[in-house]
Amino acid sequence: MARWQSGATQRLVVAAVDLFTEQGYDATTVTQIAERAGVTKSTFFRHFSDKRELLVAGQETLSRLLADGIAEAPANASPLQAVAAGLERASSAMGPANRELGPRLAAAVAASTELQERDALKSVGLAAAMTAALITRGVPEPTAHLAGELGVLAFKRGYARWSESDRDDAEGLAPHALAALEDLRAATASLG
Image (cartoon, rainbow, N blue to C red; front, side, top):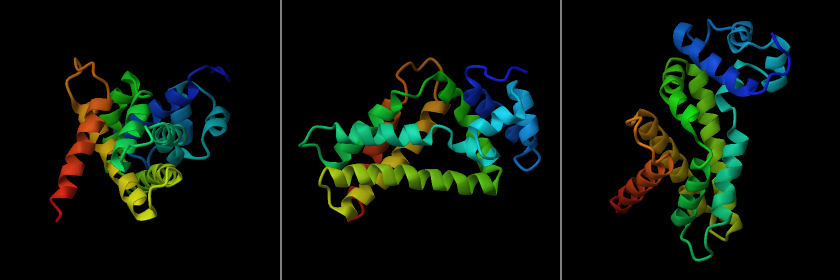
């Protein structure tokens, strides 16, 4: 096994998700993940502190992209328009590999309480990044918090729709995430 192969992080994530799906999270070892990815166990630990962390690979980048999109939205954008700009920016970083991994990752998370907890923490982190970016724009805290939470929900719903949609759909993630955000905006209007 090579020590410093390029793409090790992505291979580790794919190997882990495949193993979690095949044999369950609890039955999967770091050694098995490293072997499936074609790297050493020490390479695994250079990328991740434990197997739970595989679930949040790229979270920092995703948080930054969401926040950058919000920050760069036009000055007169509403909080949800700014969130939409964040969703568009983050969506641009999602390619075919992310789309392919979606259903398998969802199945692995659904089958493990520990992964569900880690996924919930990831959502909290993404919402916090969007909330902070909105507050920086001058959005009041309660509004910023609500818009950030809606942004996370829209991202997750859009990602699920995209990963389960027709593979001939070349539009990418953004239209799905933006449609989900619009659905949520309409739903909030019906709350009264």
